[in-house]
Every structure is written in structure tokens, then in C-alpha cells.
Image 1 (spheres, rainbow, N blue to C red):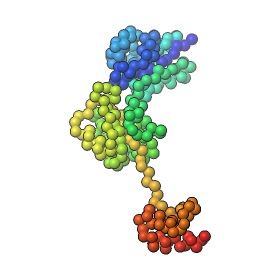
Image 2 (tube, helix red, strand yellow):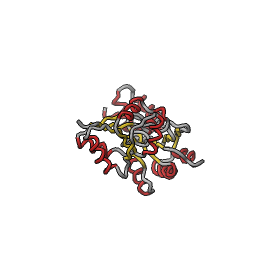
Image 3 (cartoon, one colour):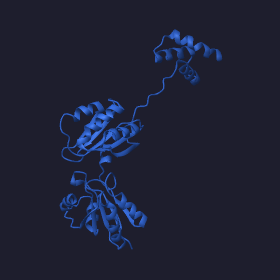
Image 4 (cartoon, helix red, strand yellow):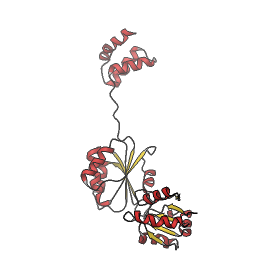
Length: 277
């Protein structure tokens, strides 16, 4: 029988976020495919895990997948990890998982940390509907095009960003989405210097321009505010009359207050509607 590929989430900063199951799986498998073996070795050493490491990153994943599939078909269990967080989520791993699916090899998840979910959970932004759009493009024109395409969304948008591109990204977001658009930015989540900025895009630009930015970043942009179409005086009169709860005198008074008009003006405009009754 073929072995199993275990997709194992690892801490995004704080090593205490490793799960008991993750430690056990990494200790029991025949091989661990890691994005960066040197980086992952520090994690394994912390938990006294002696399992052999092999690299599987964006530059060799396609060719490495064939080798790993051979080991899986031979009956070996293998774990897939990235440098931090959940493999295949804006990290290498998708191609290997897909190759296993196509080859009929079992793939199971060992869930744990993910920077996007960690950030959303403390952002204070609506999470009933959101879209993860990965890293914003490095080049200005491509970045602005993506922001223009996604900026009017009626749900929370989540991006990853690098420290040296943060201000450029915030400047483009402010220009396209408006200075008052709400944003939450998670920096160094779960680490010693964790920060969660919360405010407008204008305030974010000011805040992060004060000093050099370090660490991993998650940008969470609030949904665009939808401007409701302005109701005309006639539409307001008809709506309140149809509800049947107010007299015409009360309707005129309420519409005048809502629309900032004089009672006499609204009364005059209500006359044609009254004549239809």
C-alpha cells in the first residue's frame, strides 16, 4: 500500500504554537519535505525530532514531486512543511499535493497556524465573507491594476506584503480606495514584537512611514462602503403611504424632516399622490 502525505502546519513565530499531533507526525514519518531545510532544522531541533529533511521549494517542487511520489508509492509516509504556517497557502506545496491526488495517494492535513486566519481573528473586521489575494505584485502598474479590480469588493480583502514594499502598497491602496478606507495590518503575529494596526489608510501611511518596518505582514482591507441611491421625495411619500401606519399629515412631516425640506414643499409634492387614492 502507498504511504500518506501529511500536510503539516508549523508555527508562524512562537514555537509553542506547535501542536502535539504535528510533533508526533514529524517524528514518525520517514521523510520531511521542507521549504528551507536549514530553517526547519531549528524547529525540529527544538522538539528533538530526528527525521531526515529534504528540500521542496518553489524552484524544485515539480521535479521533487516525482521523487517523493516514488517514496510514497513504496509505502513511506512523508510530511510536507513550509518555513512557517500552512503549506500550499501562499507557500510551496500545491503541486506536490495535486500530484498525489492525481496518483491516488492519500493526503491528510495536520492543521495549525496560518497568518491570514490569525490576522483576521484579531482584526475587528467582518469575517463572514473574505477573499485572500496572496501577495500584491511588486511592480507598481500591476499592483494598481489588482487593487482597482478588487478594491470595490463588498467583503474583507486579505493580502500578504513584504516590509520593503509596504509603504508603496499602502500608498496605492489609499489612492485607489480612498484615504478613509479602514484597514488592519498584522505584523510579526505571535512573535515578541507582535503589532496589530487598526485605522484608516491615511493613518496607516502615516504610522508605517515613521520608522523602518520589519517582519511578516498581513493586510486586511475593509469592504467598500456601498452608497445607497438617494430616495426621492415622491418615493419616500409612496413608501410611507404604502406601509399604512401614518396619516398623510404625519407622512409629510416625516419626509420633510428626512429630506431637509419645508413641510409646505413636501405637502405640495404630495398632492398628486393623494389624488390617486
